[in-house]
Length: 65
Image (cartoon, rainbow, N blue to C red; front, side):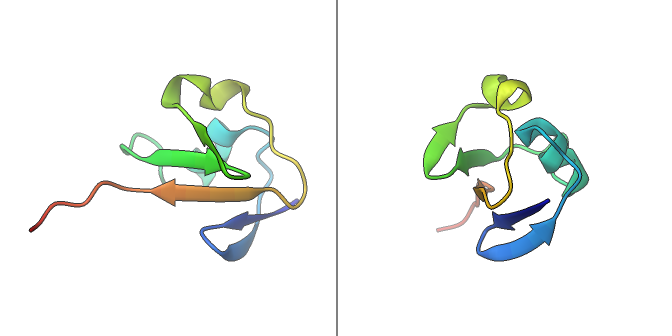
């Protein structure tokens, strides 16, 4: 299925948010996620289903000043 990840269309076989993060190379990384504009905490990602056309935002913390 196709989902929009940080503004870019991606093809994925994942059916849940946690699986998509693994597939996209974010497995084990500390990131914040939003699915269709709604924040999804890390504890809920395994239960957050994906559907064709979903919008996923992935934000990684940055250091600096």
